[in-house]
Image (tube, rainbow over the protein chains, first blue to last red):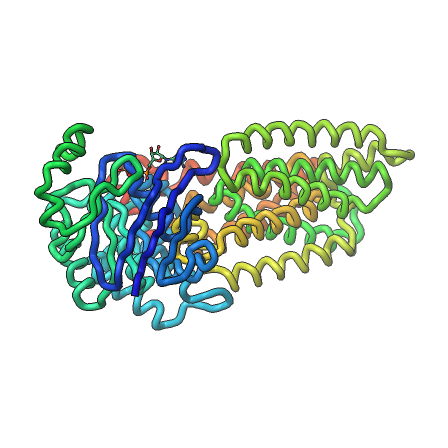
Length: 247
Length: 283
Ligand SMILES: Nc1ncnc2c1ncn2[C@@H]1O[C@H](COP(=O)(O)OP(=O)(O)OP(=O)(O)O)[C@@H](O)[C@H]1O
Ligand SMILES: [Mg+2]
C-alpha cells in the first residue's frame, strides 16, 4: 500500500504568489523509513505539512493511506503522528507534560468520548519509551529544549500512528540522547512496521534503519534514492556547502 | 449602607456569582488562546449593542448579543488566520464601537435616560432581572457541560493549535465555540458589571489563577472561584461604600491580581527556589 502518494503537488502559502514547493512527486510505501534533507528554507516543513493537510496544496493531487488529503484530512491525521519543528514554549504555560502527551490522543479518541484507562496506559508507555517518566508531572514550560522535544515525540507516539512525521527531532538533543532516540526510532520501525519520515539538515544523523533519502532544494525534489548513494554523491556537497549549512 | 429588600439582595448576589463564574471561566480560554483583543472588541460591541437597545427600546440583552456576535463574525475568521490586518481591524472596530455606544447613549429617549445610560456604563445591581438570572444560569450549565465534554480537545487546542489540528481535532469548531460563549458571557454580565468594565472580569481572575498553577485543571477550577470571590467582595464593597458595582468588582479583582503577582511562586526570584516551588505545586 502507498502510505504517501503525491503527484505534481505544489503548495503556495496564503497571501503569497510563488509556490514554496512545486512539482513534488513522491511515493512512500508502508514500512519505509525515509529522510528528507535540504538547506534552510528548502521547503521541508512545508512538504510535511502538505502531507498531513495542514497546508492545502494548490495544484496536483495528494493521497495518504490512499485517501485524498483535502477530503479526508481529519481522518488521516488521526493516524499521523507529527513532531513539529522547535517552537518557543511560554515558560508559564499551564500544562503538565503527561497531559501534553495525552493531548496527542485527543483526535484519535474522538469527540464525545473520554480518555480511558487504556489511553492512559498508552500515554505512560510512550513517556517511558522516550525515558521521561520522571518528568511526566513537570510543567511543560519548565522543561529544557531536549526534554521538551522528547515529550513531543512521546505525544506523537501516544497516537499509535501508522505514519510518523518528524521535523528535525534531534535539533535540541545532545549526542547521547540523539543516539538513544535514534535507537528508539529504529526499534519502533523494526517492531511495528511504522512508516517514518524524518526531516533533518544534519547529514550525519540519519538513523541506521533509514534506507531512503530525499534531497529537497528550493522547493523541488532534486534527488531521491538509496541512502548510501545519496550521501556519497557530489551534488550533496554542492548544495550544502554553497549555502553554508551543515558545518 | 443602603437598605435593600431581601429578594432583590438575593437576586443580585446570585447574579454577581453567576456573572463572575461565566466571565472568569471564559477568561481561561480567552487568555490562553490569545483572544484578548477580539474579546475586548466583543465586549465593547456588546456595550454599544446595549446602548442601541435602550435607544430603540428593545431588550438591551438581545441587542448586546447581536452586536457582540456581529463582531465575532467579522473578526473571528480574520484573526483566526493570524493575518496582519486583524490587529488593524480590531483597533478600528473597537473605536467604532465605543463611538457608537456614546452616540446611542446620547439618544436614549425619556426621563430615565441618564440613569439607564449610566447603568450600562457602570453596571448596577438593580438591573439584574429574573430573566437575566435564568439566562445566566442556563449559560453556566451549558459552559460546565461544554468543558466537561470537550476537555481533552480544549486542552489540546490551548496547548498548540497546529499540533491539535495535526492530531485530528477540529480546532476551528472549538475556536468559534469559545468566541460564541464569550459573546454570551459578556452580554449577560454587562448589565451587572457595566459595558466598560465587563472585560476586566474576563481577564483579571484568570490572570490571577495563572500566577499560581501549572496544571490546567487547577486553573480551570480556580479561575472561576477567584472570579466569584471578586464579585462577592465587590458586591459587598459596593454596598458599604456606594461605589458602582462594576467598578468595585473590577477593583477587587485587580487588587487580587496585583497581590497574586507579588506572592506568585512563578515569579519568585532566585532560580533554585523558583524551581522547587513550581515543582511542589504540582506534586
Ligand atoms: N507562513 C508562511 N508564509 C509565507 N511563506 C512561508 C511561510 N512559512 C514558510 N514560508 C517560506 O517557505 C519557504 C520554505 O519554508 P520551510 O519552513 O518549509 O523551510 P524548511 O526547509 O523547513 O527550512 P528549515 O530548515 O529552516 O526548517 C521559506 O522560504 C519560507 O520563507
Ligand atoms: Mg523546517
